[in-house]
Amino acid sequence: MALIDVVKWEVNQREFCHKFPSNDLRIGTQLVVYTAQTAFFVKGGKVLDSFEAGTYTLKSENLPLLNKIINLPFGGNSPFQAEVWFINQITKLDMKWGTPTPIQLEDPKYSVIVPVRGFGQYGIKITDPRLFLETLIGNMPSFTAEDIDSYFKGKLISRLSQTLSRKITQDGISILDVNSYLVDISEFCNEEINKSFAKYGISLVDFAIMSINVPQDDPSFIKLKEAKATAAQMKIQGKDIYQMQRSFDVLEKAAANEGGGAAQMMGIGVGMGFGGMMGGMARQTMNMNPAPAATPPQMPQETTWFVYVNGQQIGGQTISNLAAMKAQGQINENTLVWKPGMANWQTIASTPELAGLMTPTPPPMPPIPPQM
Image (cartoon, rainbow, N blue to C red; front, side):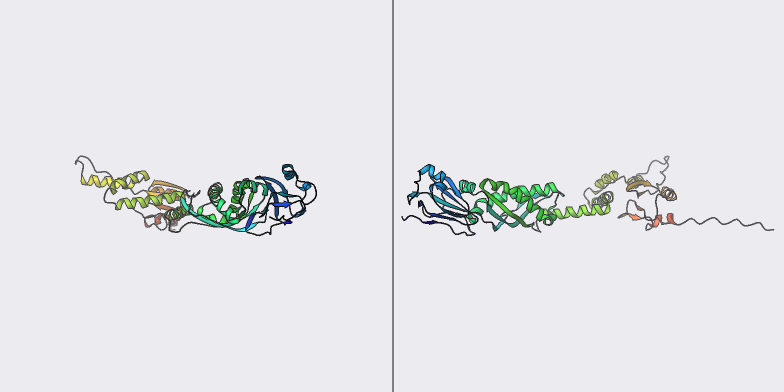
């Protein structure tokens, strides 16, 4: 094979590593290294001298490590054998990624696990060419962007799953809102995933998450939206009123359940403090089984009301109690009240039985002056 006079490799965006096709060199050969390239001389599988961008005439003085191994002669056109490898250090920005299967993530706000998918793009750059050549290349004559994608796709998705979960947990980001934080999450993932690539001399550049989505008809996603709606309703109504309303719903369902509704209704009623309802049931039982004639019947009990004052529910209030509270300025026509049998809370002014409490008391008649 003829001795090589010029050793060079034209830069392209596909290959990141290229082995020059001949190792028959000579003293005086020209080595051309283009911008964003690094050239290495390799002998016996050992990476030796390196050259940055520029044009060089090969001689023993600029190949000290190789000279130490093969004792290059001084001057002349003496031949020698060595491999020349070029590492391309351009930045390739159009690498694509996507999750082949859903990533299971727990929503930090509503504690619902949902399957999410994502996709985006990233760039790669060889930042430590010697480390890249020593750890990945071996004896392959070429190493392309597709090879990097094939080697690292699984590692990237695995680290992405861990990193994404940690980010949304520590920042309390709901899956429902995650697309509003993609820039911040992308920067965080870029920094964390780079730690896995650095050991091979590779850096990720501009890692970007373009979308994170969940199938709209997935049961866990539907459950997550319901959890958010419930939280919003509690925030609007207030926790106490929302819990009371939920109890009414359960009570109505229990009453409609023919199989054991009475027992459930009693349990719920006692828990809620529905003394009036329980008293009514007790009276019905006594009417069905009257006591001996010597025992007088119980006096009918006055209806009691729940009243919502200063963020608290106060039960067992009679109309007389409410009148006293009104006189003391503790309640007014907009105060919420409820009693067993009502479907929901309503204001005193809209409750026929209590509306009269808000009617101003007319002043007494003035005294009639004595007639002369």
